[in-house]
Length: 140
Image 1 (cartoon, rainbow, N blue to C red):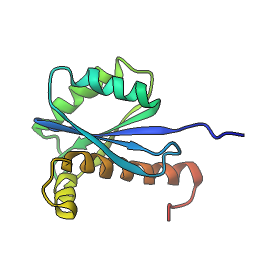
Image 2: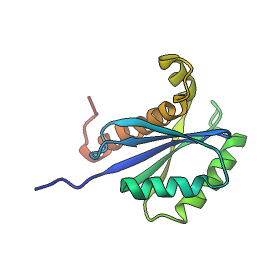
Image 3: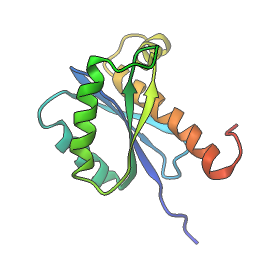
C-alpha cells in the first residue's frame, strides 16, 4: 500500500526577499527550495508553489522580538498569511523563528540562497515538533 504524501512548504518572509523550503513527501526533512524577490504578486507565487507541489501545510516564520513581542515585519507577515489562507484549502501555520537568517549565513557563508536555507530551518523546526505530536516520540 502506498503511503499518502505529506509535503509541507516553509517560508522565511522578508521585506526584500522570501525564502522557500519544501519537505520530503513524508514531512520528515526540509530542503531549501528557492528565493523569491518580494513583490505584490508574492501570494500568487506561493499559492502556485503549494498547488504544484501538492502541499498539505504551509509553515510561515513568525517574526517576534526576543521578548515575544510583535515587530514591524510581523504585521506584513500577518497580511501575507491572511492573503494566502483565503486562497488555499490547507492549514497555514505560524512557527516562531529566531535568528534563522543569521544561522544560515553562519553555516554556509553569505550566499544568494541564505533565505531559502533560513526557510528550511523554520520548516525543520516545525517538522520536528510535528513528528513528536504525530508519533508520541521525540525525533532522533
